[in-house]
Image (cartoon, rainbow, N blue to C red; front, side, top):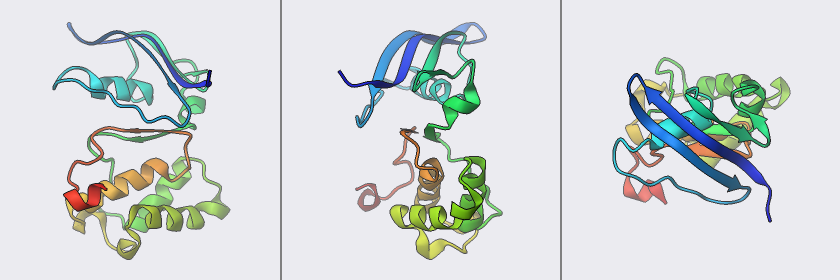
Length: 173
């Protein structure tokens, strides 16, 4: 059996009096593609936010490569790339400036940042917008920049929440 890269144990999260997620358990193995399906308000985004260390669970835990997101969030997050439902973009930076900033946050060595930025812009089809301010990009290209920031550090595990928001049908493929 393949080793789990993510293990979710007894995960629950409550917003004041309302439970958004209640006693969820699952494992994710390397090289798999997984999805969370459910109606609006079912707790999909909450689960992803907890898995990536954005929210703290009310109960339970998430282990990324055996590292507890509760006990050692910095180490656990090194293995994760995350694109939340709304990309965390800085509108006053150029695409290159923003991705360089994200690479630094993700501990890409200074000597490798330029190469990493060029590579991820190529993968995401945004190289020709490298000097453009993010505020001047269409929603679809902003989404691509969001995807680029999620993979800039070559994570072992990527979480994408509504990754096709704003993309034209021909950009989704």
